[in-house]
Length: 624
Image 1 (cartoon, helix red, strand yellow):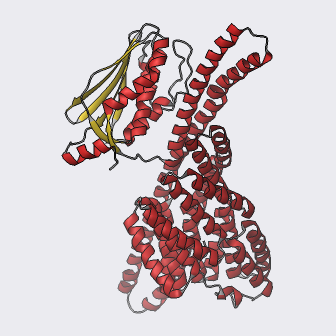
Image 2: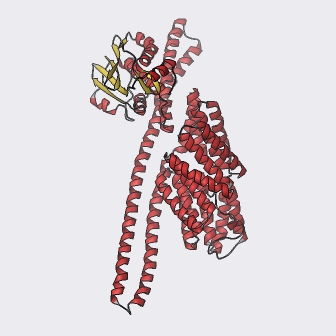
Image 3: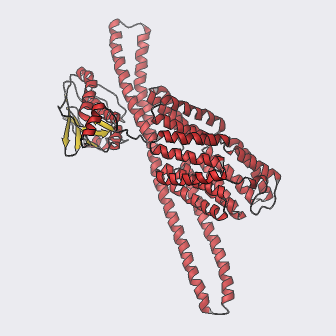
């Protein structure tokens, strides 16, 4: 957070109106800064010592610096309420000292704080204030630092062109200043921009440069962020082993240095890698650790509540200061001009009234915007809580129950008291239960992955009827066991641009559900047809059907997991996953049903315009 600061102010003298220049204060501040990017715990210890001496000396500038370092360290440790408290105190100390450089640095760190919360609009407001201070003070390093931070925010917002322009400008400036860490920051942001543009080779080339600069500057925290980003690139390039090695290194080093948020994200990413490689038990173990560490809804709400209070007090305090200064200036002007003319007096008073009115209007709009943001954040947090509760419910009940049944069957088989006929019967049941549990777990992990990362579809030309035939072939043995007549309509080639694996998973879920809720001797008909510019796929069964209440809750987190006609289990996430995947591929899905007569699930996808080039690509099976 403090890259680009001129540390000669600590090594030599403290800027601003310091009452004393205590060597102990300067020493502890320098030690705290040295450890900021290497160990947040050691940095905090030194910062608290500096704060103690600075408070005794009534040294406002040093107090502001110490409070700021403590706030930065709490952010690194994931303790956001404490971080915000100390940053607000740092701003109060800095404003009291009238040290504009320190005020600008606190504004920059407040921008960093809100960046962690993904409150990007608020972060940019603070960065802009900091940039104004440093530009006026002609502090080039500090100004470049803020430009770099703003570039990163635009990159994370997806405004890649703006981010690229800012990062290039900041990089050129930092190269002229020969600032190692700032060059690393801008190369990391450029790597993020190229990653967003899916230019992964260019992204890695820039991240490799950032890694070298951070290593030269002994910035352990930023080095780990680069390693994590390189792991993301490996994952995109379908290289899970190298991605896993990167994330594991981040986890090991972050645990040593106390960067709590990096430990949390490492657990999340390792869980994703293991789910992709099929190591589901370890994926669940990592995901459980991620959820436990990330279960900070109360902490975030507390931080936002503190933010609301402090913003309110800050606005009132600033208004009070403005009123006091304005009243004092007003009295002086009245005393001077009253002797000359009452008309001149009113010419001064009326603009002041308008000035106060503008201040009050500004404060009202600020409070209104803050309340709106808090309301939106509360809704997001409630959704996250619902997702978390749903996951724990599935893991503790829907998955644990079939696993307990498997354990009981295995214990019976291991006892040796069963006959050969009983062993064969239990073996068949064991195989069925394993397939059923594996299918449930696959849906759970796919959905969890989509919630954690926001999966983007990898679109290619796919033949929808052919995909349906593949799925029907896969489930034919299950349909035969229940004597279900499962058919697919004969359809010519109908192609679309979509993610093949996503659409395949959707069809698989719909067919599996149809088999699950269709009694023995029933029928399932899969139909694919073209209507205008849309491909419609329907899966109709002659099963138990659903009432209006159940239909309304389909494709939501409130959806009820029901047992099939032969007590088949489910997690209730399959249809929710279907909805997400179909919408990601520009389609729509819905259901129609009558109790006792069956259900029909329908989705549509846009058809592509066929031409000779696409025909050739389709024939080769290549992606475009």
